[in-house]
Length: 506
Image (cartoon, rainbow, N blue to C red):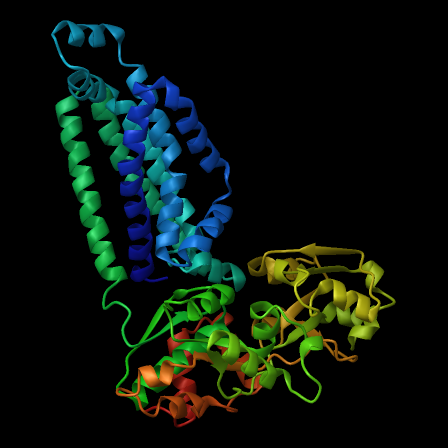
């Protein structure tokens, strides 16, 4: 966890809160003034609140792409209900006698609204704002799933590595932030409820001004320097994070080019950004098997005879998307089937075929992506190919998979061959004795126009990036990810040390 993540989180929450005020307050007033539109406005606000936050972000991402704008818009929409409903309700509950007195004094309808009704409805309105802001602090955790940054990045990484400290620190930070905001807003709410309207309004305006200042300050930290030079998104896992940072170190060591690494983002979203009409990045870490099945939606049967998967992927992506894979890094991070060493000893398991007679006693668990019907390297084709009939097959969130197998909730799982967490969880990789899973060769996926784009600052850019070609083995990468995921060393430290040992940077 870092202060940068905290500032990112504050920026997302407070900007979304300000936008929800700009939209929600007028909608609440309109709902109060016009009973004819009240029902549809409140119905839409209710409907938005019922949509799961992840689903809402996914829908918005289709139109806006991944990143902070998607998260900010999602939280804004999610925060409308308490503001709209409380504004309308607060205005409705202003005593009829006050409204009648205002009319008797000859006030216009707008004068009555702004001078009498809104000031008296402020306590109820402020309660809605308070609820919206506190809820947004927790909801913003999902920003990490769509490249929005914030404290969710640290929490999800901690969950994946079963690192309680890494989970608790950002969670504690969120609790402190929420408690601080709630305490301050509760005090202002009390002033308003006690009839101290002048003090309350001054406090509310001060809070609004402070919120704007915090947004500007947090934004200056979040976007300090902007996206300069060659741009990459950070990966979700230690391996892709390491390779991303190594690319940054190499390029900045051997060229005049600066590299900007943006917030972490899923591989699919990175590919969409890389191949967009107006791309927001120049390259990413990927694997030929992932490109084939996940990005191109093809299968190994689509590869022409006599052509390798790597060459077929490069030919297809160059023609269709204007991107291609650079030299193989030496990593074959393919799918692998694993069990705990205790389970392997109990049933005498060495190969995947050894599971056939005992599968009925074991529960298989893997991330949701492995259970999709996309491509032939997934669960259903796998069990049909080997003739396996497990006792149960349970999808689990990828961040909880290692915890589930450690607790014996599942006994068999799918893993990535080079993941250092396999070693921490004391897993035994079963030999794919019938060669079901293809190679997943790691490589940098780059835009074809990238080298021309940076020809002035880095005429040797292709040679620099290819310095890592063939440098790794699965054993080396497993050790590097183990340093990060298990020993708790930083990505920057491990990447720098490795490149120095290879003599690639000073």
